[in-house]
Structures are given as C-alpha cells and as structure tokens.
Amino acid sequence: MTVAIDDTPVEFWPTSSIRSALETGDISIWQRIVVAIKRDPYGRTARQVEEVLETAAPQGISKALNEVLVRARSHLEANERAEAARHVQLLLERSGLGEQEFASRIGVAREHLSAYLDASVSPAASLMIRMRRLSDRFAKIRAQQTSAGTDVDDRNEDDVESADEYSGAESDS
Image 1: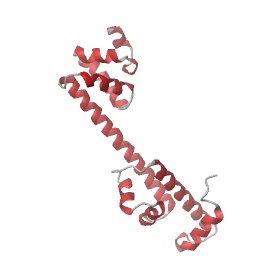
Image 2: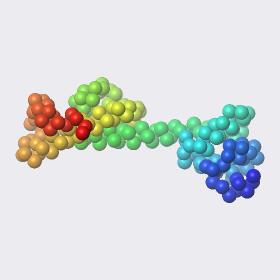
Image 3: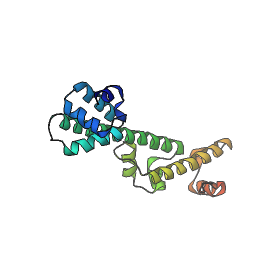
Image 4: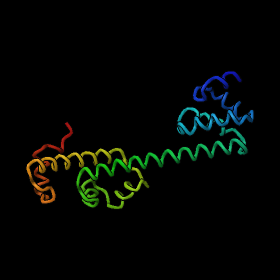
C-alpha cells in the first residue's frame, strides 16, 4: 500500500489509503492530501477525508484537516461570490442603467443588488439570466440609438419600451 501512496496522485487513492495516511503520521503525505483538498474543496479527496474524519477522534491531524476543509471551502465560495459580483457589475455597466433602475427592472431591492455587487451574496442563476437579458436588451437599444445619432441619455421610458417591443428582445429565440 505504501507504493500506491508514494506513486499515485492523492485524487486516485481509495478511502482506505486516505485513512492509512492519516493514521501513519507522515507529514509529507498529509501535505499532499491538503494540496488536493485546496485544489478541489468539494472533490473526491475532500469527500474521502470527510468520511474518514467522521470516525476519527477529534485531535491532531483530524482537527487540522477539518480546518483545512472549512477554510478551503470558505475561500472557494468567497472567490465564486467575487466572480459573480464582477459579472453583475459588467451586466450593469453594459446596460447603461443606474443601479436603482437596474435593480427595479430585475425585480429586486436596491440593497439586494448592492449585496450582489459587493460579493456578500450571490444571485440565483435565474436572476443572473434575467440580468443578462436586461443588459442585452439595453445594450442593443443603446447601440441602435448611437448608430441612429440619438443621444442615449435623451431617451425616455416610452422610447425604451417601444424599442423593446419592436426589437422582440423579450423573447429568447
């Protein structure tokens, strides 16, 4: 079994090898497990470590690996929220709308949009689709008005709505 641990990437180890590695006390092996967890905090190795930790005494390496799991997952989730926030910001900017108007048109309070933009909360996938559609619609309207020589800031609500209806932008064909 030592050969399998030495030669095989951690991600391919069976759970029994993970359990043995945690019981041996070899820090170089533990480090390999930690690297695998950090690389994929919800992946196979992380799940195997969770399974082993369920039956392990809460001390030493088991406490440390549990902390690695918690921190790696927290870090991943924060990065995902930041990525979603950047995407929401791009959609907002592309739409040309102010934050209040954008929030209103996607059906959320201004405070919720702010939470998405500052990465404290991630919007639901369906809301991201709604944001993209709104951004697409207004980007298209702005492009049409710019090419027609109309100042985008001079538009009024009726112009925008009639342009929406005319362009058929509401349908996703």
